[in-house]
Length: 263
Image 1 (cartoon, helix red, strand yellow):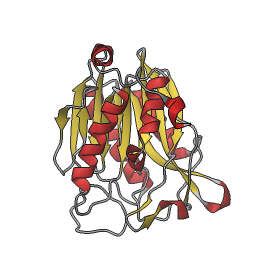
Image 2 (image 1 turned 120 degrees about the vertical axis):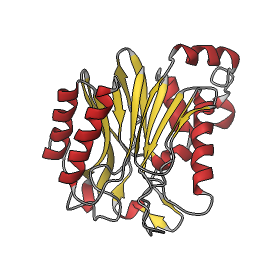
Image 3 (image 1 turned 120 degrees about the horizontal axis):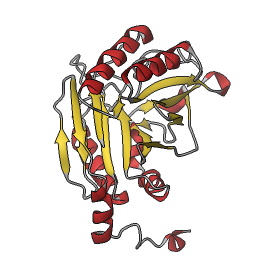
Image 4 (image 1 turned 90 degrees about the horizontal axis):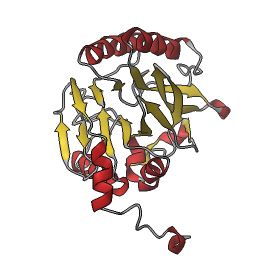
């Protein structure tokens, strides 16, 4: 399966960001990608109050993404904000395109490194997988990468790959943590891990998570197959789905689990 990771920088204007989604989707489709993945907060970057911008999944921003996906003939996965009770929002991944219509609300909220996502965002509770051309793909968002249970849940649901969209906060050691965690989650679940971050905006330290770039594709054996630098760039990669079964035969971490010990 050919996928594309769109490592771009979004701003506070959803309309402008939608035009970026359209431009980068067209580029990905021209390269033959069946799925194109955009970062977390593609609708509007962090640092923008999300509640006034949040729209339902049948609202104009999501419908714009659907129109883009239909025109390109490819599945688009993009981060947006949807309304939630109590004046908060859900940090949502929309997945839409030929034969696909699904969404995932971020389960693990980024209450870490001095930032409190839960002040404005309500946590999701349901893992999500989608099927594209007979291949099952899990969906995850940013801070989720620190929690191996979600990625194992994708594998248990039949996923061969997880698509991870992020707006990774900068700081000492954060790039090393990003790369280590993405590789570890691929190994935990023996899945392909395609992780796309917002590009580094290049404006110095920020009190909110923006992005550091360094998107990467990791094989089910934990090895890095493709990686980007810090700036805006499109990564197109072919995932050998047969490799997942081969790795699981050699590295039987899923089969050898003993969950009853930890209950």
